[in-house]
Image (cartoon, rainbow, N blue to C red; front, side, top):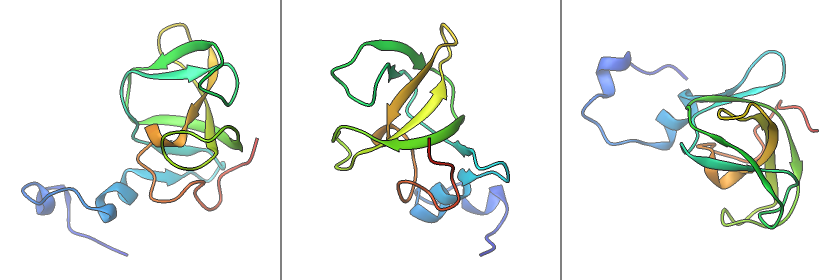
Length: 110
């Protein structure tokens, strides 16, 4: 699908179509996606595990996905990425990414 340039939607409210444009699987199978800034990364795929880092930038690159504990997003999909503060790798629940479906088609599974 093709949409207008960046200026064509400046005054329009955000839609799922706009989200899809800023969240896509790259040719290497990794996900480039906007995410909630300040979201924690966990050691394991569970909010009960230790926080190892945070994502302060958006968009971010997510290496792969896996199944873990149920989270506030209502599913068990978690993504693996590198944090911004200490550069440690960790898991982030899907609820903190602006995906239209979890996991996105074509993304690598961990």
